[in-house]
Image (cartoon, rainbow, N blue to C red; front, side, top):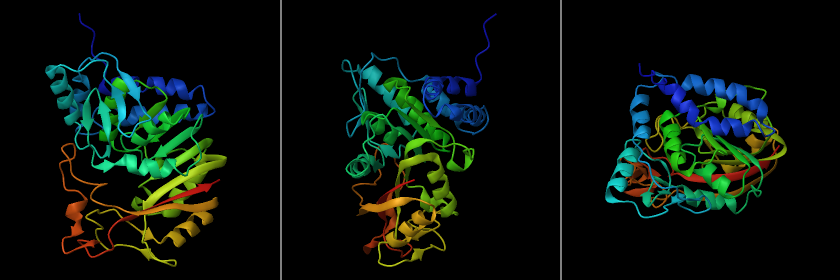
Length: 335
């Protein structure tokens, strides 16, 4: 009799086993039991209606010669040991395309260029120019998407990176990427910051990139980020802001740039007050940049509407709802 296949959740969790083994050998070892238990639950069969299809895409990834990881490049990924055959190339593209849309990137996998919706390398360059060096640091990336910033953190020398994101599609994208990159120092788990037990702390660096404005309770999110840090650890916070003087808050009554769940855009001064109120110190704004259609746009790998569709065609300085167009600020702070 042939052995029964392992349940899908078990197979997916097995792909994360190298990360859980790594975390066991770090000061974050106490994080492993609750994270592993919650991950197993979220990856169980039937938890999401599309999970079986995404897992099928993983199973269809073609076997390829081992390449050379490139995590310190704008297009993170793996360089091929030799050019792919047309059949290998087509099989790889089909499997990756089944995980569409790709929001964060770019990634280069064996010569396949995943031109994601966001030029996340631009945001990474802003971060890397001002944040504390990541060499040998324990990093937590909250709302990490498919792990782009986590891979770049490894390229910058991070010892271990825990990424969390509640979207199972993004977790499966990470597993597809890491199927070839094969780095157990990064794990992307299907969790939100609100899932994390209250006792978890000890990270050297915490990233929260594009999460705060999606939180109804911004103070609770900032309190969680502070708690995750060790004393002296650094928070990198990137969020939409109202680029204006003073202390004001734009709370869109409906959608903002067609997003339903944007709860508040503070001015930079008000955002600094929020961070101070959360108990963080040495707060500084390191970048304020309007989002352009060069940085966020539809591509062959993200074929839905994107920023150009969300701006007023008569006045690109405003959203189609009449709000100021997106501007993002990046701040650093310490516990």
